Image (cartoon, rainbow, N blue to C red):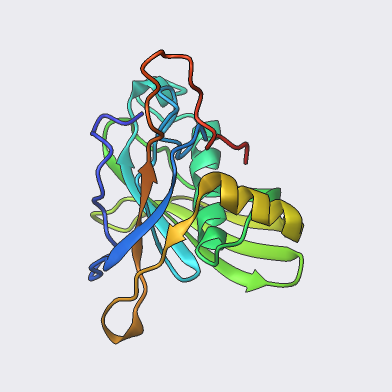
Length: 199
């Protein structure tokens, strides 16, 4: 939940996304379009990187006017996880080491960015940060360690999230906006989306 509608803004400086990366709508607290109480991060990806720009509303504050540290940890973890997903891989968080540098104010634009820095057979390492998009001043940073899910589970997750897309841009550059496809609505109101998967 942000104070702005979930739209695909906040491209990387100088970047023009050339396509969409589609997946099924889901209930992830950080990025799920179906979670009305969540952050609903508008996500963007390119190979080995992910970013989001959003405005946190008072729902996510700790001290008055200041974002809760646990929410910041969630944002950093999500940016790392999506940097991994840019390779169409799924990993589960094993460790997240965070350095909080200054308070993040509620109600102002922030940028969350993550990048994959090392990929081994099972272990994936990321770096992530939260910055002021106007000044690039850093609010917080994190080093993450993720364990790659077993291949069978990765296939199940890809199927559940229905990952599709990866449009090539000019000169072979690949950048995507993440777009969630909402499930068809059952007029009886008894249908539950089959796209929901826990991350």
